Structures are given as C-alpha cells and as structure tokens.
Length: 163
Image (tube, rainbow, N blue to C red):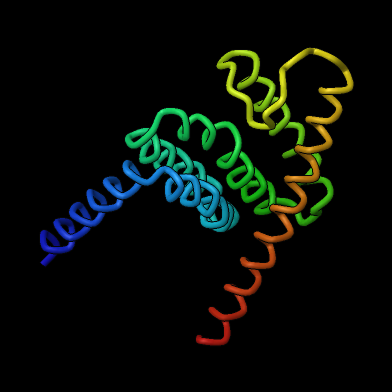
C-alpha cells in the first residue's frame, strides 16, 4: 500500500513540475504562495521550517534557476525567518525589523553578486537607495507577518474547534 502512495506522489510531482516548466506565471504564483505554508511550518517547528525552505528551493531549482534564486533570497526569507522568530517571540514590530534587516542584506547580496534586481532599480551604493531598500524590507516583512499571523490564527482556531 505504501508503494502505491509513493508512486502517486511521484507522478503528481512530475505533473506539477511539467506544468511549472511550461507556464512560468504559474511558477511565480507558486513561489509567492509558498511563503504562507513555510511561515506556518516554521512557526510550529523552526527546524522543520528551515528544512521545508530548503526542499522548496530545490524543487523550484529543478524547474527554473532564476526563480529559485528569487525564492532563496526573497520569498523564502519572508516566510522562514518570521516563522522562526514568531516561534520564540511574540512582538510583530521587533520580528519585522529583524527580518527587514535580513531581507535587506539578502536583496543587496543578490544585487551585488548576482546582478539580479528584485525591485527593478539600478543598483548603487547610495545611502538613499540603501535606506529605501531597508524601509521596503521592513514594511514588506510587517505586512507579510500580519497576513501570515492571521492565516495561522484562523487555522489554529479551526483546528481547536474540530477537536
């Protein structure tokens, strides 16, 4: 029976990978929406969340290199680190600031090393641009954290009601 489920899983993964390979818009949507489950898993168990982050990165890498780098340094960071910090802290502002700094560093790292632009702006070392990237990162982290917390709390209430 277990072999039957693993075969179904492998076939479904192959179908999903083919769909993602030929329709890049679906891949982008998949990457954006993967932030929420990674957050939820990371909030429940930080080590499992980090492992999930790596597995999703490898899955995306098997379909498209460019999108996998964007996930690794942007969408994944938005999902995994707030979830890990939320496991230990309960202060949204502090978590957003810490994650905003991590996200700004990863955006700058992408811009400097890979010449990949997330914000579609020409990269420079100007203090104004760095401040804007940091502000964008903190605001993006806060908005994502609020949305993910709402989804997590809703799922938690549903789980408690059903038990």
